[in-house]
Image 1 (cartoon, rainbow, N blue to C red):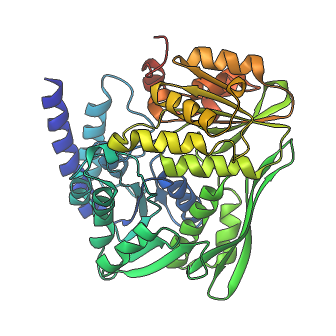
Image 2 (image 1 turned 30 degrees about the vertical axis):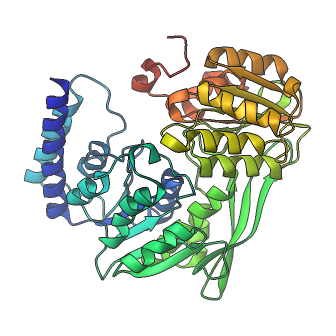
Length: 436
């Protein structure tokens, strides 16, 4: 019965979303990739809303229900028994009586979990501008595909379906992403750290002085260059998001100076390499929203690049990797000593693979602890951390490692403000390794 209801709801939302697009004709910016979609979407929103009416999902609304939901209205959550009837009624009213405040530009995330997902989302709306953020060697959700190439082909549909008058914004540093260039009729703009990138990132720094931190870089385009600073978030992923947003702003006629001014107010989404003050004069790098091999590598490289008395990594399972699960977790574990990790705490069955490989890679057994319960891992971390520690916390969303962050953050009363997945619906759901 539930499956039938969801199918019917999905069908209704698709029809209403397509009718809404036809009625209002907004510009559509679509973002896809295995990592960095949400940060890129937020950076684009921050840049464009300085000059246009823009709507982007406030939550992770990027699938067959979430994407049309963003088209239909600025909904913040899906809580409540009467939520979907309200959505449908509001959408019908909006079709009958023109909404003068409907956005000029929609910034949408196109997520892919299984074969056919992208085709379904593109049947709802095809963007005019498509951004392909990154793939990585072992992308998330590969479990449901024959291999990484199949995932890439599915995501690349977004780029291949762009109109000839559109724009494809591609990550110049990712060879798999750049393969999509040959598949599009649209004009291509690239971004990244490579010299060949049209929008180029240079002079990148992770800044952490023991009391605050952020990233700094310069963005260059067509001979012009501007400095960009992002506070309270770390990692090259923030620079990539800023560069993709800059490319989008340029398409809409903004200059680099205006774009840099807009990016000064960009805030990284919760759980994406966010810097949070911890107890005992420590700091936490909260990257708990999700995990894939590529994003895990970025997070650990970020930790390695910073100065701290001691570096602690709390790592959980990377899910939906299928036959690549063992390879990905063991490869990660073997690299931890070289990446300067002093204390490793893992959560979950796959997390234990990381721990075992870390010991084989030279990390002392005394510096490694494994848990099958998030609460126990949080309490252990609380007992072990010391003044001056820098703590990276990262795992797939099913592991729910934000609970570990809440255990050791300096202001747990502000968890709903700072952490990922803090709406009522998510808080009621048990994770893989919680006590509920």
